[in-house]
Amino acid sequence: MSAAFNTQRVIEVIGRTIAPVVGDTVAATTGLMHCRRLGINDGTISSADLDRLLASVERWLTVFVGNQAASKAVAKVRRALLSEDAP
Image (cartoon, rainbow, N blue to C red; front, side, top):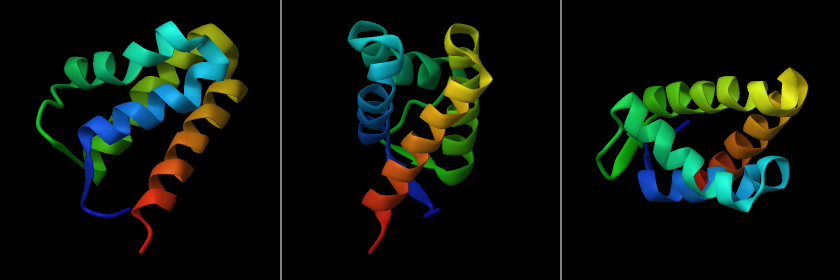
């Protein structure tokens, strides 16, 4: 992964990607909620913070949809972010 990702873009990708799993309303707030909880507030997210954020989202999703679906959803988020970041 690259050194930094735009925080707002990460939140948007999380929401868009997990919406089919948890619904639009919940998905729209998930990324922001987890960023705030983890103290991720600035305009960029480092690779390490992105890993922490996605791990937090995955743990939370597991409660609602189980391990397998949560893992698949977060993998889709990661792939979407990496493909946007690719040169």
